[in-house]
Image 1 (cartoon, rainbow, N blue to C red):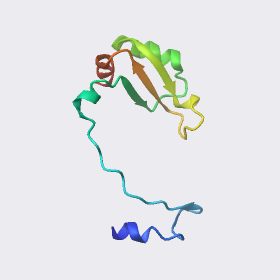
Image 2 (cartoon, one colour):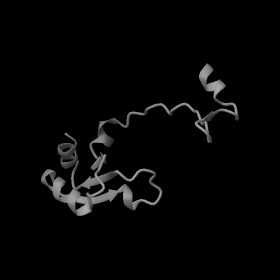
Image 3 (cartoon, one colour):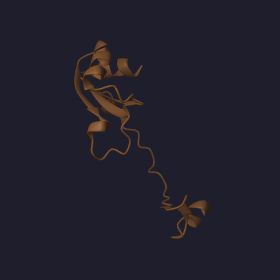
Image 4 (cartoon, rainbow, N blue to C red):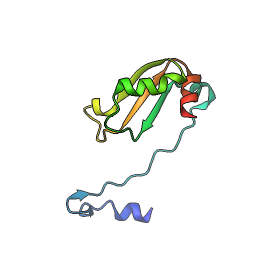
Length: 99
């Protein structure tokens, strides 16, 4: 709490020109087994720049039907471009992929 209070000052900066923004994280809310059993989307990090949607689909189709692929490089608001989301046709396919 003391660090939080100290970093609330307007003159605190990181590096040359980055103003510090400090806040507490929201508490984690467990969505429960019922909601989690419906999740079909997997987050994939550290995708090489050469991997396009077709290549990602060809790699992951062995886990089940791939409904949708969203790559960060196609998301205008994404700061990083090396991740993506893959939505499978079933929760079980998403679990197989994640495992």
